[in-house]
Length: 368
Length: 75
Image (tube, rainbow over all chains, first blue to last red; front, side, top):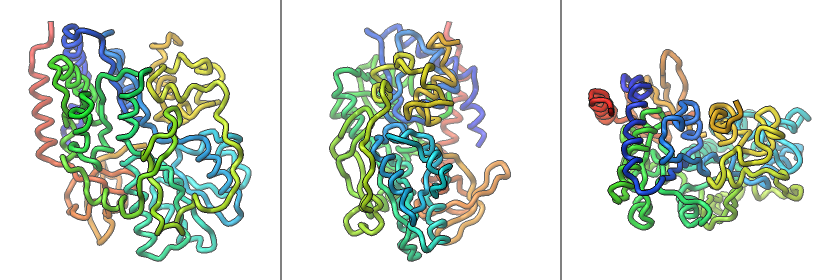
């Protein structure tokens, strides 16, 4: 993959930065661009790309960190399930330290609950196979990149007759929040850097609604610094020409039609359902529930009584996730809330906007 | 969480295969890309190949980058 090194070439990145500067000078008003994906947030912060942008181009982070947008009551339910004597919780590592209303999965694990970190949904099926006497519940959070892998794990469990593999659905879809953000009067987004790996599944054609229906520029980009900066150049050009379209700058892995096999597998197990997002509230048909015929694999149907949900006091994670404020505007940021003592989900997850700012963008907040 | 990395598929069975990158070998599920063939570069996310890297497009990206790099720097 000889292209890779060039994609990180600092000189090329600076060159693209100068191009953004030249374009921005010709724009009638400052442009606010949103990177939707948490992996982009992290990549942008790590490469210090905000420093290369002129004042006329602002890059804000959106709701694309799945752990961050998962509402607290989901974690309360996971904690309640972990208390059942025959339940093993299997989770992606990111969720371990996210505060529930009263605790974290990490703390529950330290108290002796059976909580296991998995790298892949397949690992959860394997654990279920090894522990036939227990119900193994995979915490199925994620966007369209991860959801097909959860569906594939369900398929594998069906094929191999692993009856004790269950999923607690916490899926989020990308289109509904994009529409909600465009309609949000508090947030003005002039263009989207679209999530590269969600797009591998959905396909470039999926986003036609952005340009045609909503008139908003979009660019699907990869995760290297050159990828991201090329996307910013593209969005500025679209704004300048007033010709919104969806540019696929990640065509090496994103096809127009996406991955139909992955989408078919998702559709076999899941159906759209109204779901709640931290920061964005309930958005119609923005999540996925297991279809009724898979009820026996739905850990959401196991009767438990989770505690009364409450978000941590003073935490403004929700506003950060909508791009309404930047982390330093939250009163807890860098005070009560740091990666060592995180209060909100956005500081816990490595892809959370607050964590990315803490690690890489402190100069912007004048904290250095 | 949507992190994915390209790896080269070095062998494949019915539902899974082995993929390699820089000498690191991992078992990956091929349930989401049943058309993947040995030698393909696949994009791996959380233990599953979710797409195949288009080598022609990768080449085009590289050429585009060369073009950008050869342009006169902005004044």
